Image 1 (spheres, rainbow, N blue to C red):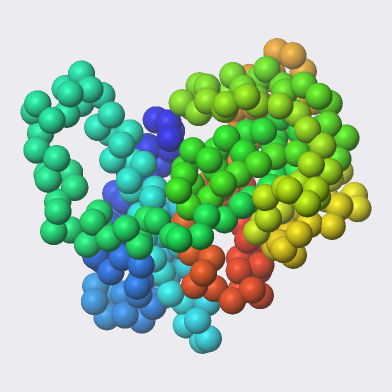
Image 2 (cartoon, rainbow, N blue to C red):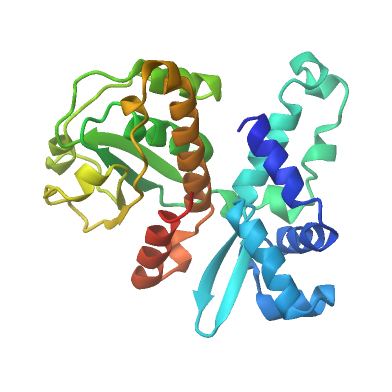
Length: 282
């Protein structure tokens, strides 16, 4: 999370309706609420509320899933935790306990912070990001999801024709955002088709070339989706820093939406549809 992300979050919550809707959904935790319940609780007309809920969804603050004829909304609690960490990580020169009671930030009686089922699931979902060279976009996607989805998702990356070298601009952009990859390497997607490879739950292509290629047979029949992102490595040398920052921002928004999902609460078709629709977000 960076200053731009935090600014966007605060801008989204600058509306009284959106702020109250978000607080209400935080209170409900993993249960969430359908749109009609939120409308009644806040005394806001449904057509007016839908605009505000869409804004919160687009910024990753809440998630939405179809339940028959209704839409159920939930607060993105991991994102809220990440925001709190961002705001307090350097409080009192890193010695938070000396000036603020931990209970102020994380009350023991709060269902939001004490209920491990909200933040932690028994199953950790394995996600493989693919692009042709596995040197830039898929590397950044791997780093972002492992950073914001820690404990719920395990991300990997690979390529159909790996370059064998990780793009220095990709690593530089990740480090700028406070994300450090351990032993990053450009590798073939065949590694994840081996018998001892982790069983994949999601396989997501982030470049158009990889989306059109014939993939190996993945164990476990993972959900597949395409989140095409322009190639920042193709930018002119003087524009590369900007291009990588823009590509990172697109990936971060999409992955934040993805990380807010609770896969176990959706059936296969709904989950597949939702994950694929995330690829339309810019």
